[in-house]
Each structure stands twice: as structure tokens, then as C-alpha cells.
Length: 341
Image 1 (tube, rainbow, N blue to C red):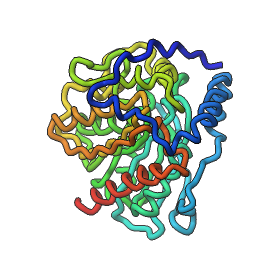
Image 2: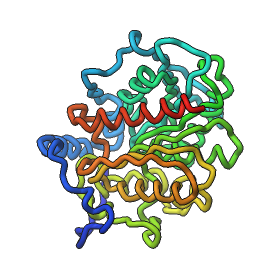
Image 3: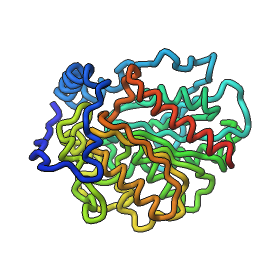
């Protein structure tokens, strides 16, 4: 089974700025016992079965989920990356093809260790059908077999491939939004940094949902409030020991590398507008809020949405009213950027 560390001591006092965000949401309360049991069982599996379970888990769809063929198109393909390996892409296209749609390069969540395109299947469908965007989801190689920086390099190579094949995809190569959830949001944030650093043009936005922005051992608590790892140490879905385990698989040595912990980047200026969504009972809450604060301080535009009292990954439960709000926020942000450029 996956070996997890201790959750550590309880937090003596909630953080003065953000501690109140962990007050339990009444809509999630009826689900908590079943959710906690489901994820406890999942984490009791051997590593290979644990990874396989994420690949076979069914997606929970809301009643209004767009349907393939009717509301959007979808096709799988492979591309070659820098070390000659082949990785998969899933392309979700709007129902009315164009040659000028915005590209959303989507990197899925899963702690850099588990998951696939289906992790964010619902949002990908909404973005293609309601946002009139072309979504390219990247099946990057994952830890522990492929540690940092494989996920970054695979995703960056996929970005460049999309821009080079814009006509085939029907996209405008100068209208690109990098997007992801959790570890996928970490990758998306890094792609925005890396594109700026390497002179890759056309990144007009970044969607960073419940993002990982800093290794917990390196969090700059002298600059930002950072109590959520302790306050939410035993949270539902992803608690503090589980998140630390993901980091151990991806970056075994906690080194202050900006392309792993973008909050530590020395220069956060000249980055595209960001949507950052955080959840109140998420161990990652405060680093998401810190990244929003850091981006704003560097002169960037930030739209911040906070879901009080909900755990990391709450959108996998479509019966929560906040899940639709979470998806709508992303679609609205993308639509606004696409029409403004």
C-alpha cells in the first residue's frame, strides 16, 4: 500500500486572514463520511493498483454535461516530444469548427502521479461546448517513473506542437490559455513562466484551479500566511500526508526550483491574466492565495474565486451547487479573454 506520513500536530489557532475559510460547508457535510471512506480505501491499494484505479474510475457528470458529437467533437492523437517519446493528446473541439478559436492547453490534476484526461473531463466538455474553445488535454508522463521535470517538458513540447500545428487544430496560435487543476495547475503556472522566459508568444491567460504553487517545506511563511497544511491536515479527498506523498514522488529532494514551486520564482512580472480558484478546507488553500497575492504584487491581473468550507477536488461531485459555479467561472474567464484579444 501507499506509505503515508503523519498528519502532524493540530493547529493551535486558525490563520487570522484565511482560517475562517475552513468552516464546513453544509452542502458537503452529507457526503463527507462516504467520501472519506472511499478515499481511505483507494489509498490502501498497492501503488500499481492505486494508479490503475484512477484510470478506470467513472466520471460523475452533471445533468447538463455537453454530449460528444452533438455539442463538441473529440479525437485522440499522439505527438513526439524532445526525447523522442510519444505522448497522447485529447482534442476537444467546438461543434462549429473554426480557424481562429482560442486554444486551452489543459494539464490534468493528480499529484503528478495519477490521472488522465478524464480527471477534468467535465470542465473540458464545458470549455469546448460553452466556451467555443479548442481544448487540448496533455497525457504527460507521470511520477514516480518520470519525476520532475518530465511533466513540465512534455507539456511545454505539447504547447509548441499545438502552436506549430495551429491550422490543423483550427486555433489561433496567438490566443492560448494554459489551464489545469491541482498539480495540473502547477504545470500550467510553470508553462506561463517558461513561455515568458523562452520567448514563446501568444499566452493570453492562465487558469489555476486549486493550484499547487510551492513545496510545503519551502513555503515563504515570512511573506504569506501559510496555515492550511496544518488547519486542513486531515481534510477530505487530499489531506496533508497525501499531498506530501505526491511531492515525494515528483520532487524527492525539496529544492527551491521555480519550475516546480512557481511561488518561489524571483520574477513574476509580465505574466498573463490569471484565474485562481481555491477551496477552504484544502491543504493547498494558502499557497493558492499566496500565488494570487504574489501575481498581483508583480503587476499582473488576477481573478480570485474562493469556495469556503469545501475540500480539494470538490468539483468531482456535481451534486454540489458550487461545482457548476466552479466550471462556469472557468468558462466565463476563458470567454472574456478570447473575445478581448
